[in-house]
Amino acid sequence: MDYNAQMKNRVKRIEGQLRGILKMMEENKDCKEVITQLSAARTAIDRTIGVVVSSNLVECVQKSNNEGEKNMEELIKDAVNLLVKSR
Image (tube, rainbow, N blue to C red):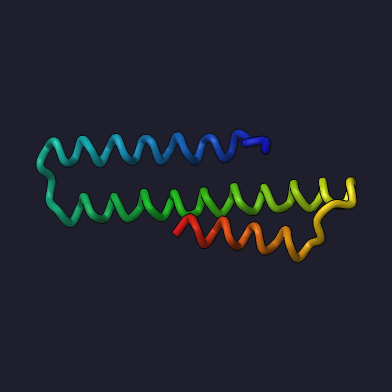
């Protein structure tokens, strides 16, 4: 799997969010503010998982077409299973 710059940038942004949350905790910020930021980080992680899985599916389908391996239904099942496991 080739993780492109967009995917890596998403993870770097999430890393920044998490550092910000930790700083908020160290500064004893309001619980609502911390929870809001934690929720935003979780959403960003979920979206990043979706990007990685969908990119992986596209890559596998292209590879499969070239090599005549798994059928499309199996590839889609594998992608859905990855998404389900991530939750």
